Length: 200
Length: 200
DNA sequence: GCAAATTAATGATTTATTCAAG
DNA sequence: CTTGAATAAATCATTAATTTGC
Image (tube, rainbow over all chains, first blue to last red):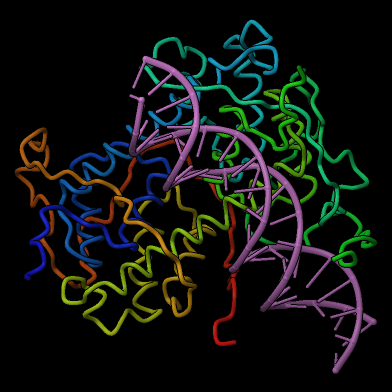
């Protein structure tokens, strides 16, 4: 049995990885030239044609959007009163900007001066999430968080581990991702040590 | 009646979106301070705690890696002769660098001077993809790639639509993604990562 | 169309490794 | 060599998505 001639392109992991990397990088609709270049480079890893690249981006973008829309639908059709956004009239564009703004200024390392296309898209989708297709949905119950303390939560023990749940825009430290890579030992503050490793 | 206490955090679409954005941006292991900040900001959209953020990044990173590993496994255990990498001894580190290099220099916009952590990780994973655990998994369509020629494939028709399948590193246009928003990552440095040794 | 049953995702915990001090 | 911090990997558990029988 000759393997099926396989009618369709099957990306190798390397190809996929690189396409995803480019997508992550912000590329959404490569032009002909870009597609040519990408195709040429990726062909090192296996058979691939320009149209494969083209379609991949088309599909990936579409599915990304669809996923987001689905999530928004599900979430907002959810029973009210237990969701913040549901309580408020719904954030105005200004509020949204104000909130997402932190993303923008927060990490100059990976978010440039302008919002990335993805974020912009998403914001627009969120702010005017009126339409959207039919999407089933059911409820779910969010409430309480037992938080079994334990584990390596020592890192935040002293500090306010998490803002349990306030509702205002909240404005604390605006410093943010100050690294990305690594420096593990970074400046996590004092190695308070203490807990961890013990009850096991 | 008291609704189910609900034991776990359920991210709102907005929270998810922003976490993903940060992840995409390159953030992998936020330190305590970053977690605090993120938590504070995201709490605007609903209940959330530091540990949720912490766990989210842990899991997301882990599952990303796992996904890649799986793909590599699947791919390399695949019947040979129809995959390029299988034919070659397997690219040496130098070759890999040489090939991924294009990603680095190709789009200065979104890939800084150094490879992003993700890419570095992946490269390392690929180059030494020896071990890996048993992983069941059903064939989930990797990433549909239609090929119904026709359609709006006019854009590349004239040009060499795709390099059908040559095998050398291929070096054509190095111009590349000429747009998008912005340069992100800063000095990601090399990081090495090296998740888990191998022969143990 | 619905809702129980099944399957996939993913949040939360636990266990193992790794690495750097001491 | 031992110890402790920091992660990665593995696993558990619950919620979301699908499927299936009425």
